[in-house]
Length: 223
Image (cartoon, rainbow, N blue to C red):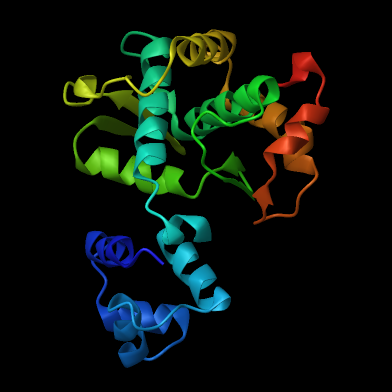
C-alpha cells in the first residue's frame, strides 16, 4: 500500500483515523498501524477504503498521479472542444471521457488515461471522476451551475491555466472528433448510447468494466 497516499486521502477528505477505521471495520489502533506501514490491509478492508474515497483498490497500491493529471487534461480538452461559454452536463462529460478512453483502446489496445471504469446506474465511470469534479470545483478551476436536476460544468479563468502536455496530437484529435459528434446531443441520448454498448451491458452493476469488451463493438458504435 502507498501509505503516504492513504494519509493524504484521509487528510484531504477531512476524516479522523477513528472515522476511517470505523468505515473499514477495524480498530483505530490497527488503522494507525496501517498508516505507519506496520500492517497490511486485507482485501475486504482495502475494498471498503477504496469505496470510501471513490477510487479503485489499485489506486491504493500506487498513487496514479500522472494518470489523474492526464484525465484532468482530457476533461478540460472536452470543455474546450465543446466551445465557447457552453456548459456541459456533468453526466454527459463523464460519457465523453468514457468514449475517449474506450475508443482509444479500440484502436491502440490501451486506454488514454489508464484509469479503470466501473458500471454504475448512470453509466461507466472511473471512481476518480467524482473526486476530480469536487477538487476542480474547490480549486475554482470549473464552475458548476445547478439547473433543474442537472449540474452544468464550465471552465473558469483559473481552469484555463490547465495545460494539455500529457495529450499527444492523435489523442487531441480523437477528443475533438468525439466532442463534435456529441456536442449538440442531449444527455439522455448519450447515456442511452453508452448503456447500449457491450462494455456496459456485459458486466454487473458495481463491477470494473474490462476495456477488452469494446473490441467486440462495431466500428460505428464505439463513440
